[in-house]
Picture 1 (tube, rainbow, N blue to C red):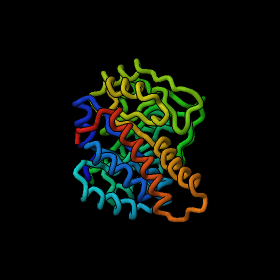
Picture 2 (cartoon, rainbow, N blue to C red; picture 1 turned 180 degrees about the horizontal axis):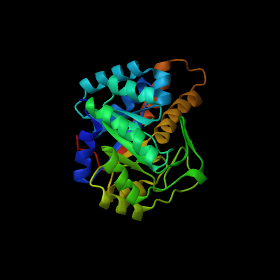
Picture 3 (cartoon, one colour; picture 1 turned 45 degrees about the horizontal axis):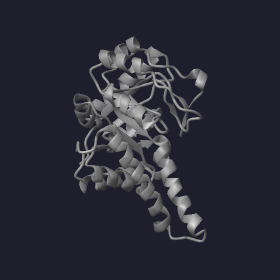
Picture 4 (spheres, rainbow, N blue to C red; picture 1 turned 135 degrees about the horizontal axis):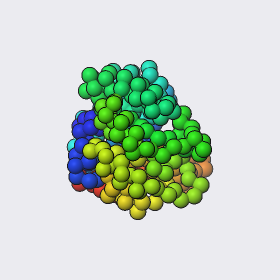
Length: 283
């Protein structure tokens, strides 16, 4: 069934677990995520970036998700990840997405508040949840690119001001993760997370979680993280599956076999993450 992220994350917030937001770009990605959620009896968030929407088509992505949700026994949300383009945000709100992230983190605090508050007003009127972001993660993911020197950890006091001024449903914070592949092992600022969670009685989001050790993710969940974004890890898993096919048979041309192996690898990674986040059995 298709629901909002607020419905999913409020339960996670109250019961101290996290739900994975897994990015997808095509049918095989979608099936891998949904099959894993069904197997683990977990709620799940299907995340689409602006680049993925441009690639697959917004209407096509919505239609696929609606069919998957109709035939599924687990709650799932369709979420726009890192929405920076106003027209894309509005199209998603108007055409079936149940959640959007407005990424105004490149603005100063007041500028971020202004753009986020406007999207909250429009989205809430349509029954769509909104995630905001305060602080900036370094790294590259699709159209998002932030240099290490420009990355800024989330200020707890500013986070409280931001949430109260915008009315967002969940807040993405920067505590040491990064987009894309890590060059080393990330060091998370757990003390900052604890302080933010104490100030905000709401779902907290962790972006850039691919490559973060599972033990660190478990600790982050225990301290109040309720939504964890995974993109690079599932992309890598899918690609590994495709490579496996061609290594065994370079002349293979059956798309079902090629993409099917990618889907199989991706599903396994999604199951592993769900187990780590504590959402297994919470559907």
